[in-house]
Image (cartoon, rainbow, N blue to C red; front, side, top):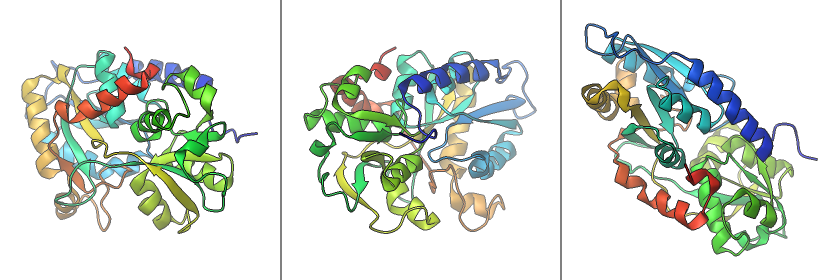
Length: 322
């Protein structure tokens, strides 16, 4: 029996539907109501947690302070629990800015969200945007030593809309011959899928034995959870890793207008980084841009995510379709 923490596919679908209602009911910016600097009086920023968090906004507070200083707008933060609701909020014009994983960004476009990349996050100054997905099991699990061994096992994914927690893992499972495609039916036919809701929750479920194996992104397992004490060194073993995935990114709703989007892009790329925000007094010590513990933002273009689109074609994932 799996813990109630974990959501199976039907629960995830119901949650997405409920969240869409919530976000579409929120007020986005009124393009006719602008402040003295030419920005909307209010900007709405939506994000979902990479790790389970009751207060995701705390990770975004330095960025929110920066945006309010640079734009003169009031930034309204929305902590969402599913990518689908954020996409619906963008389409409805009620979400102005969002932080997306690469898969969610591609799916947003497929489903009609008209957005522009503002920049992708990097872990350190001078770094390149990108990361990897890990396939994991307990270090003492002698039955699983490669991704081919996931067949028939309970496998923790993060969310059906997660790049490194679902899309790339299903591509790996296809290449290993464990599943035939990334559709819900094919995944369920090859493994027993469990949707943990966060990368940390997926890794913790594997460590606790609630899942035989699971997936999470690299720095969550190698750094974040070790530093927090949630995982011990050597508690999990990596049996698979993906190719490099384009970085998670901030996007702007094009309903803001081209000039506003361009000005926001400049703010994100030039000033949304730990060094600048510490200097401005928005944070001290570790300065977090998101809950992914990124250092800052670098330029990103739509074409950077063509690799994700290729994986969508390979997996035939239901989530890749409009």
